[in-house]
Length: 102
Image (cartoon, rainbow, N blue to C red):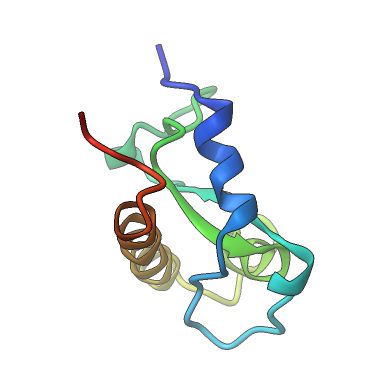
């Protein structure tokens, strides 16, 4: 079963865009959770990755990094850019005490 947590995903709407590749950033309209799109994070046919595996990105960045919507990025580029944003997202969540380990 894939881990789902709406409250965790909602945190992305309060965070900045952590995409570092060139794009027309629309974070002023809010950000959204961009899930990992690879098997190591649990992605598979009919399976989305767990909700903890997201990077906070604006809508434009989320679409730009999507394989279906933007074939300009290679698979390796998409993974690298997503991973950069994922690490920044995790740092932000813990440093700003949005996630606390009890």
